[in-house]
Length: 273
Image (cartoon, rainbow, N blue to C red; front, side, top):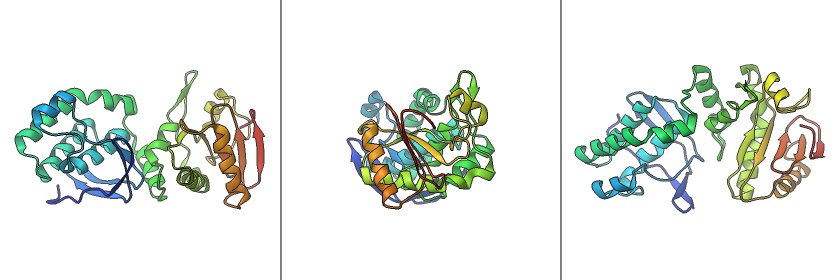
């Protein structure tokens, strides 16, 4: 572990939540971790009883680096859960938390953190190919979306058919669509969820996708937003397309919006993917 830590640079986005304004890179005993710009987290993982025992709160400045890296590792599964917890403990100590308090905090994590770990990946650790895929997406320099988030959209199951990550030959196909939705997210100023990205042939059939779906080519996203109606998202994307930001398909549905960069404009409502 390196001898000194620079706290991540963040901006507040909601009560208790912050977003990284720059990549945060840290060397750990288990490898280098790069938490990408745009990553959002909500402070340190301290159960309420432990806050009184440790005389710490989740927003203690000495915990900022530990919380950021720990949340990222839990969400991505780049390390094992124990490795992620050990990194958290070591970052606490490096930033001035005493050994006894750091050890107590670590034991709380070991006892209680499994719920969050399982929720983020449902007991599933990344394969080497998935790690490579996440690294590729993060290398695109997106401000608001991470490789881990897009990976999750490729892990879904429909009627017993599990989706997969796209073949490496198609990874570059998503660059244009990724930059479009990143700019959309910036313009709207509210979180957007990726409901669907790549779909394998079998998974696409289970989703009711059309034969020539752009999802199969890894050129498409289905987007959802809790704070904006699909019509609002659709209109924002339509304005971007009219401004020449991209050429592709736009579909407005009841609960989501489809966007792809097929190279020719297409527009529909309620059917067709």
